Amino acid sequence: MRTETRKRREILQRAQEWQDRFDRTKKRLEGASVPTLIEALKNQDSAVSWPARHIIEAQPGRSVRAVIRVLKSPSPEARRNGMLALSTMAFTGKARALLPKAVPILVGLLADRHVGFVALMALAAIEPGHPALGPTLLRLARERHPFVSVSGYIWEKIGLVNESVGAALAEACRDPEPAVRDAARKTRRRLADKRRRLATGVPRLLQALDAPRAQSRFRAILTLSEVALYTPSVLPGLIKALKDSDGLNRRIAATVLGRIGCRSTLPALTASLRDEDPDVRAAAADAIEAIRSASPPRKPRSRR
Image (cartoon, rainbow, N blue to C red; front, side):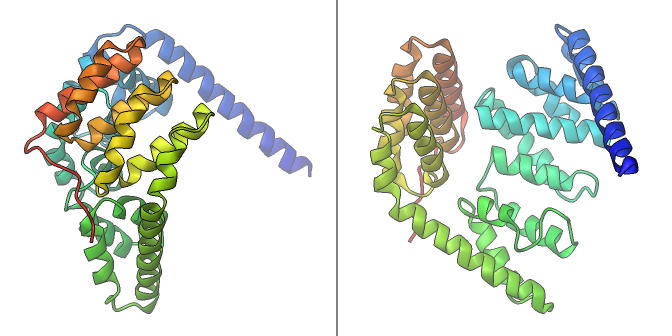
């Protein structure tokens, strides 16, 4: 009992020491130049590299080009932190117009044994429909990657909007190992069930956009964003959310529309440039820039 208590105390002490170093580093790096922050990303001490990444994520406009360049760094730690920063930028919608420039580099890093999984997650955040995601998931699963078993949640998350995942699961169903075949069949069933539930639940989610509680409307917006890439009927609801009474909901709606990349949403996003909330205006501007810079323009696909 005393040994367990001592070990617990030591763990807490080490965690506090790490947090103290993190806080000191972040304070020191506040206002630092982009080259200084990029250099800190290469540090193997997470109490140094993580504060730098957090600062970079908060100011993507001036740092995204440098972060994309760091993906070619010989340092695995720098590549990993760079990809994590890009994933956050993709989620928030900031500097999204520049993120496609990272896609070819990320595809090349999928085979990197040090950072392949992080490259997979970054690519899924930036271009969720990329055809390399399904084969990479299957390869990592066959290599026994701890986070990518065929029964893992990540297959369902990416598979909702990526057709290559379905093909990879079909191939896994023919795997020589019975355990892999069984897991792949179960994952295919779960994915199909989730698609059906989301599709049949769209009317209810659209109604939830009128819920009295802002948090309920927020959850509806996030759930609609999961099916927006292949269910065009949700676009009017997301456009409607741009006029939500809650500023956070309006900002999230603008960010989601920027990720979808459908040009028919540009008039509504342009109107949001006059929103009273500066964060909403910024999100709308980022979304417009991302849609206009996308090539070629695309519309949500209907699934049969």
